[in-house]
Image: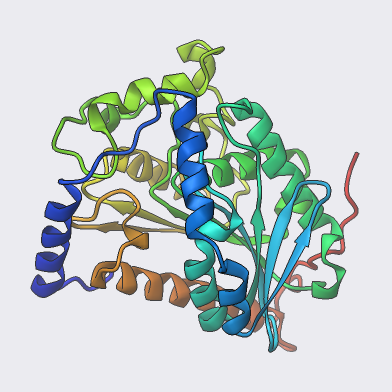
Length: 336
């Protein structure tokens, strides 16, 4: 497990007390996400300049779904397909720049961030279609310069939900799904009807509005009944996870969504290697906060991805006796 000492826990508790003084995230009115998105974009002024200053090249590709690509100056060992969070209603590819820049430096990867459409203007099913389309484009040869490289899927919060749902949808194209070497999910939402911790969430939550959380999930898909909302892929927890890749699932003990991570990890572990990390005293979205716990978790994720890459390299080495080489990124053709 990630080593958390008493000093780190004390720091987390102090930060939580600060968070408790701030408004908790929820979206009840249509104008709210537009306002928050505008403020987010304003705060991201100069984002491209900061990435270039970190020696990263930036490319935007408009079709079939907009993506933003960060590439290191040196060699690339793998490609990360990144789904940002933001409650399905805010966010953009730049949202994860700081996390992605650190990931690139530690693991020598290129990052493809998906600019999927957002609620409330876009139904959840269409958001998922964007995410699946971007994955099929990437796995089907969208970046031919990175042929034969492993692909990892990373998502946080709503992004983890969309990443997991995308993996389930890719089961329709087994050759493409087989090219994904691993998945990293932070604080995911895997049951849109609400897991027990969602329904039990009270007023002592931070970051997320606990008492409104179950209702907020319902407002995401107002055109669906609860039984329809529970069906996969919209609720990945209830899907068939067979053939999914190895995964690292990270949960936060003070997150009202913690049961989503616990239940998903248990089910995923039935079909593939899964590592579960639950961070004590951590709130939802803690990976973004300036705490020691976030830094330790980030370093652990880097180590996990590097370990997966080392296993793949060893398996593909001459004389290893492996039945097959590393899946060929970009080799497949995009199915109709």
